[in-house]
Amino acid sequence: MIYGLLVISFVLIIVGAMMLTDGSVAVAQKFKVPEFIVGLTIVAVGTSMPELTVSFMSALAGKGDMAIGNVVGSNIFNTLLILGVCAVASPIVFTKSNIRRDIPICIVATVALLGVTLLNQDITRIEGILLLCGYIAMIILTIRADKKALATQPSSEEQSQSKPMPLWRIPIWIIGGLAGLIYGGDLFVESASAIAREWGVSEATIAITLVAGGTSMPELASSLVSIFKGKASLALGNVLGSNIANILLILGTCSTVTPLTMGGVAMTDIYMCVAATFILMLSALVIGRDKLTRIEGLLFILCYAAYIYTLI
Image 1 (spheres, rainbow, N blue to C red):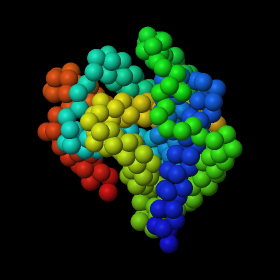
Image 2 (cartoon, rainbow, N blue to C red; image 1 turned 120 degrees about the vertical axis):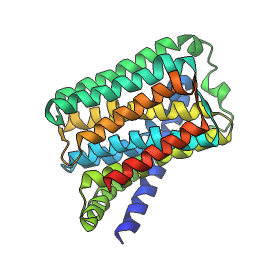
Image 3 (cartoon, rainbow, N blue to C red; image 1 turned 180 degrees about the horizontal axis):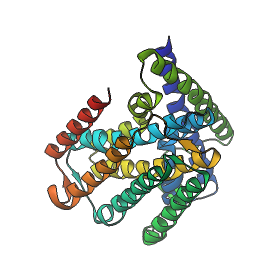
């Protein structure tokens, strides 16, 4: 019964995220917001909405370790497993912007997480506000760096190939999406906590493994679709954007509302999160020479399997 509720909560969260994202994009199109901005903000946050929902509901329930564990586990899952699987399917080529901007920003965000957790084993409101400011600064810097692309970007109406969402459906999609996220997130926290008690392990361990894997399903699905469409670079951008949003936006938001305590999340888990990001940079600069090869992808998967083995 508990596992059935967990699956139902997964479905509610993912469907809710899709509905909310579609509704938000439709609103942006109505007000003629360029799709470049929509993709950088609404769509990017939309794929991280499951992590945001679970972490936020966990924080409100006083389970800070589950909120932190979910983000840490998701970032490790994204970097090692998702990119590993994608690279095995098709080698991923690193662009100059990936190496000079995207991966370094991801490293800075991960090191920031390491820094705040090393100080006092929790994330305070002030630290949360600083993380949020970092996310806003990243968005501004990215827009400025790509302003030439933005200037030449066609309007959202010119780019959209599908029929615009009817005006009457937009509020239904947004409200329905929010309802699915809130109810699904609440159900997810309750069922995950029950499973942790049943297995006799900490809630942090469940968050790092089961919860993190579940909330990263949108990233996994969208990355694999990108691979099958021959756009491997999109998979990398999706993962890097999600990892940055997980730390700066999600943990920043949650800890601003209520301070987060690490609890059962060990510093070794944080170190693993940092190591995974540096391994990715090492692969881009030295090992694969601007490419994440199939062999490297397989090694990424084995590293993730070894990490999970040590946890359970």
